[in-house]
Length: 99
Image 1 (cartoon, one colour):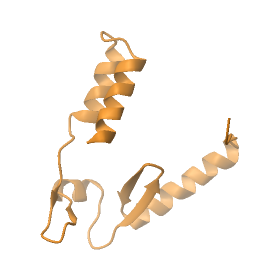
Image 2: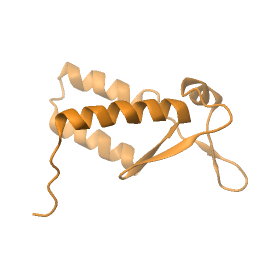
Image 3: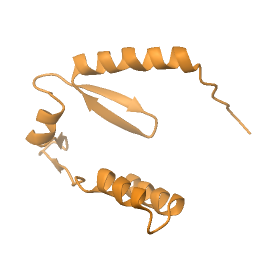
Image 4: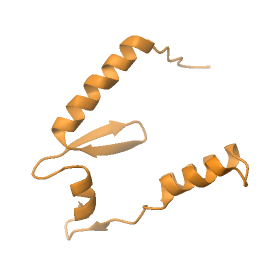
């Protein structure tokens, strides 16, 4: 829940209240958000519609994203990683560490 609150605050602080882009961003970020349930052992139960959307059937891969993670169909993730690597090779970003 904290992450959703951070996203909401960032959107509110970076855009005007009457900004149409804020409406679009808010709808994209929050309209389909919902709490997830847990099984008796404490594992997250992913709703069937989300599994279908991600084309996840028997196997999934958990992908770290800094402060969060994503759950992918393994084949789709490999393809996305290859695209991302190609993008990075082209862009050659520079990450600065420290002050």
